[in-house]
Image (cartoon, rainbow, N blue to C red; front, side):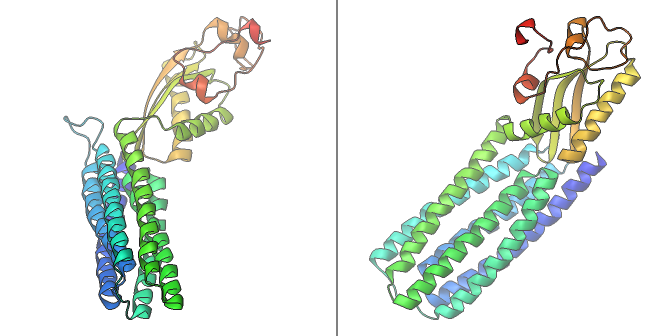
Length: 336
């Protein structure tokens, strides 16, 4: 629990930095717009308003998510991160629509561009800063399973790529003198932002609805299957739910029936250490230990089993399909 709280405090500190820097970059982008009159730079600045709002929403959500569990919230407050990401995705979508509207209007009614070099230098500087902030946010978000930081990181790096596209468009405009390029680049930028907002919103809604993360489950089954000791006869009824940066793992682990309670608990501890090593320290487990049945002797490789009734026949490899099943696995003659 202490490691979970430390991760939450670290996430909160990073998100606070992201929010403050985003506010400074917003000022720089509007300065670039007033210096140039470029609608593509204006759309970049409008999108940065979303960055700032989303940054402070993410900051508040991480503050809530870092609170310890209580009577009213026995699983903690981690779901606040999913709500934050949903709001951020909605804001990004709205910004994309506004940007496209403004850009199309500018295509039909272009305005003269001025001090283009100043604008390019300013937005280029913001792009570099945003990329590094997004990189650190993504790295820490993935390490601590924080959807709020992952959403912020993707948003910031998307902002970087779109700013680079805007700079390329402005350079083309400077070289050709065609004012419509400014609006056309902004339209493409708006479409890209809408797509990014959709992805953020899709992931956040999946978390709110406790949708199974099949990629995570498949990787977890693979890790457990490749590292299972001989006392792990079977694994089934596997489920993983995310609550902010905490993974809640629920499964049934089949071990030899003659193990005492302490020995069976030791096998569960081994499983927990393996999961934490590969998926982060923020883990809560609810593992039910099953005693093996004689019909499972065929799939058990325990070499010194004192109560074996049948010879070992075949290993049942753990896969996503059989790990999710709500029944013990055995060997069927039809498989020969």
